Length: 499
Image 1 (spheres, rainbow, N blue to C red):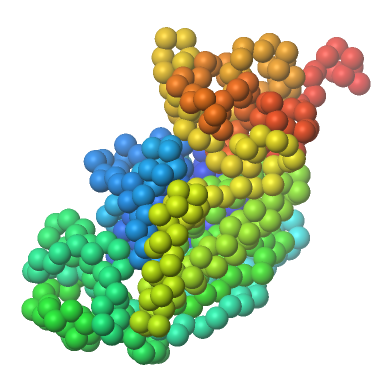
Image 2 (cartoon, rainbow, N blue to C red):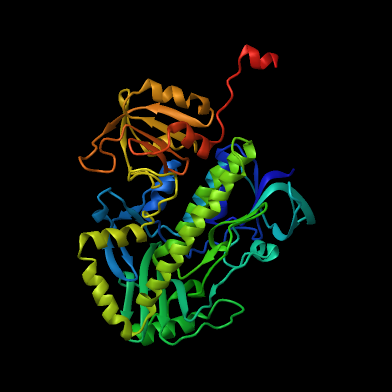
């Protein structure tokens, strides 16, 4: 084998997956047809859940000083993540190019083999391995691996080569995006509906402004390259009255509101993640963020199967969990598309939704959806509100040191938190100690009535989702450990050695 896993695509999803696999000790090769990163940035922010995910891997310091905010929106309707009560923050104006740079550096530091200028051509699934045809600087060659992961974007060559079904709706509207220098525009971080269309602006730093503009009734067009900046400037002037034609275009692009999702995220030994599996209007920057979270869900599961500590059934949960997340994402971005791109006929709906968000329960619902914080996986039955959800931030006292639960997830392993110092509980988990860190700690500042009030122990998956909690889980701890981390390690005795 040239590698246990070959990843096609060195974007956010592919690089995140490579880092997750290397963290688990899996050898991985990343192929990308481009010889270098373009520096272009479709995404310019991180949702609260992605900020948490990066915190779980200790990646936030690599970004340097980032501007955070509790403000968000759903289809242009302002939201405040503070209503969720957990201190969740989004990271604003973090260009996708910076995110890719951080993830590539992390993956390389962990030992990922990233090969640029290598284009995926075809794949053959042989049942127990895959043969991947690649065109690179040395010509065409065949690489062999146990699995292939297609993380190569909305026009995924892997998806097309394997024949994944990709149903959905075609684009109906064309939007322009341009990063420009030489102008000073007032930021409009939330979609601003103006007569005849929609406009947005953001300051990216280094004197660069991002502008996004869409004109009502402008259908998508087949283009062989990016639109001329003059076309963008003309639309901007028609909708805002502001002339930006004298600006220097750094990057210009056009995109649409097509909505599609593959029917299966895994076919044999080929898996898809990120935009290769789902495309939609990038409302609220959810595309890149969901792609990163796809990779985090897949990485630890694929590693466990490759190491032989878990069976293929664990890998099946990648599809069952993330396909549902993608389905709900497409539904919410289509709704946002109507709110953002719809004509004045949609204004009554906007007004009613704005009124409804004044109710705390409704505001919480939309804030959780926009922030990627509403995901709940099927991890087992029980009365605990934590089950299947991502672990709320918890400060813990370990000895004389206070740490966050996210720090305990830095190694990418499972974590059993014993919050009540119960030796019997820890003994029941020792047979999984090669895969799960068993930690005794004292919880700090747990509010009465919160999800963590009265919780005595929690089992966390490597992606930070709660697999078991006490009290409240109907399955016992060994069953949960076996479901998510494979069979117990057999204890070696004199009798088993003799056998």
